[in-house]
Length: 518
Image (cartoon, rainbow, N blue to C red; front, side, top):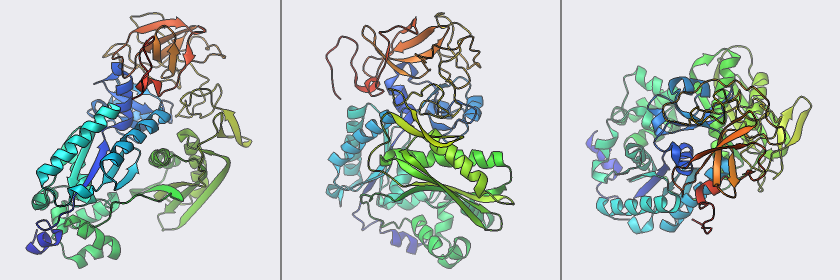
C-alpha cells in the first residue's frame, strides 16, 4: 500500500473498535450440543429428499467438502458417513435469542446480521488498546459458551469490514483482534473475494486485469476501479480495500422485504440448474427470515436473461409461513414462469407480506394442485404430518408419510438404522456408512415416527429417534445436560413414548431430576 492509503485508514489515530461475533457452524453445532453422541462427528442439517439442500454442515463434514447450500445428495457423496438430520428451527431461534441477549448485556450498540452473527461497538472500548479489546472479547466468548454451551468466533477491528474478516480468520472457536497499526498487513494478502460486495462476477472482472488480492485492489487508482466495477460500487469497494469503513453499527429496522440474488459466471441454460440455484438462494433467504422471527405471505422470483431482460413472478398465499420446503416449492414454480428464452445470468428470490405473529400454531400453508390450502403441522414443529407434501419435518419436500426403513432391524442393536426415501441417515456406531433404506412395512399411520424426531419418555427422559420400522422405534435418550446417552428400541405404539419440544434437548434435565432453566 502507499503512504496515502495507510493514512486513509486512520490506523494510528482511530479510537474505534467494532467486534463481529459469528456462531461456528451454528445449526450443526446445536445438533452436536443437544445430541452429544454426535459431538466431533460429521453432521449435515437439511432436507434428505432428492431435492434436499444442506442448511448447515459441521466442521467435521466440511473437511470432506460438504458445505451449506449444497445439494444434499452431493454432500452425502462427499461425506457418506455423515449423520443427516432435519432442521429444528424453533431450537435454533431460541439459542439465537440467547446469544443476542448476551451481546445486548455486553454492549448497548448491537446490530444483528442473521440468526447466528452480529456486530457490536461497545462504547467502553473507544480508545482501548488491542490487549484490552482481546480481554473483552475473551469474556464475551466465555459468556456465550456459559449461556448456550456453543462455540463462537469473534473478530475485532477498526470497522465492520475488518471485524468480519477477523472473525473469519479466528474460526473455528477463536478470537482475532486486528490492531489498527497492523490492518494493512492483515488485509493486503487476502483474496479480493474476502471483501463484502465482491462476488463471482466482479471477482472475475478484477482477476482478468490481474487483481487477485485486497492489497492489489487498494493500490489501484480510484478511476480505474470505477471503470471496472462501476462508479458508486467501485468507490466503496476501493475504500474498504484500504481499510476505510465508517459505516455505523446500529439496530436494523423491520425490513419490508428479505431477499437474496446471485449473478452467474456462465448463464444457466437448463431448468434443472435453475431449480437447483433457486433452492440454494431460498436457503439464504430462509435463514434471514428465521432470524427475523416473522412469517411471509408473498414469494417473488426475479430472473435476468443473457440480454439483460428482467422477468419477475410473485405469488401471495392466504397464510404466512417460514417453512423452507414451502417457500422453496413456491419459488421453484415461479421460476418456471419467470425464466424466458435464452440463458439466465441472474436469479433472485424475495419474501414479503410479513406478519408480526408467527405462523399458525396448528396449520401451515402448503401448495397443492388446488392452490394454497392448510395442512396440520403436528404437535412438534419439527415433525411433518402424514401426507404433507413439504411440511416442516420434510425439508426435501418429498411427501414421505413418515417412518424410515430398517434393513438391519430396528431391534437389532448391532445394526445401524437407516432411512426410507425421505428419512435421514443416522449412525448407530461411528464409521457406519449411509445405506439406502428398504422399508418393508408402512409405519403405523397414527404414530409415524421419523428419524430425527424429539421424543419423551417418563422413565428414560428426552431422546431423539434414530430409526423406525417393523413396528419398532429406536431412540437415543440424551440431551445437552446428560452427555452421550443409551439407545433403546421400543414398540412404536408404546403409549409412554410421546413427542417432545425440541428445546427440551437443550434445557431438560434427565428423567426424575429437578427441572432447570438455563
